Length: 364
Image (cartoon, rainbow, N blue to C red; front, side, top):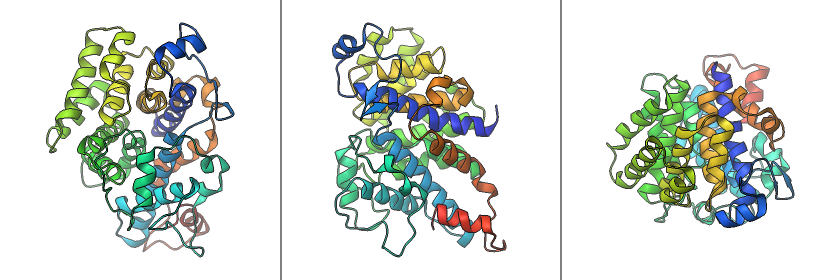
């Protein structure tokens, strides 16, 4: 499997899990069964006016990727960059699409806006998290950490692109870089350590999967780094619990409620890890991750990120990968994450038409 297949699998897989969970995000398990039958959701169902529609989870994942690519452009063009501030500016652009007033505007009228802002689907409100909205509204300077104590799952559900971007890092371990950047990006909106550390874990697992590690090895590596961070106990216990339930072959209908509902970060990560570990294939794993009474779109998105990276795009059922909303945008931004280390941009590189296009696409 090549890198491009993994990168596409990660982002498409996350969006598909998100879209599968969107129709049942606020339903109990009993309500899901009543609406869809004993098997629950088995395919895209109507949400936000059509089938295959994404939610704020995928919107923010795309803006995370755009911010990371902006950081790459800045680093290559100027020799210095800040991932945190670049991603913060991207999130402020996303916040602009959701309405409201910002203290730190992502743009002025004369500034370029980047290519994601042209897609109407990203201007739709798809149940955005109140914590993310409030944190971005009150952000005085791009990159400023959130001033709250939230450990909601809004930090972890958008963190997968960090693990993809880590593949471009030179001179330090990719996994550790992904962990640290995942934590600091989650901290832009979530102030509690348990709202941040699961994002670091997910980013590092994705990074290690891209390097060819097995899922179990990638989780073990991320846990070892997690244990070195302060305030890691809640996150570590949640992952351990998911691994035990998977190893003991506890039925999903019993295991997933035991892990929680996924509204907080460590529970969302634990549910997705459990589903990825017991999955027979991509479809089986993401359907397990959405058919529970809780934050189904977020747990589905994270499980989809993991399984899509692990198995690649070609392992995703064709009917889903071809009909999920913004499919072409997801593929293009995945390809950009895979290729950005080779872009013709730099202080000693003559500016070309392609270089100018990339700078306009992800304005620095």
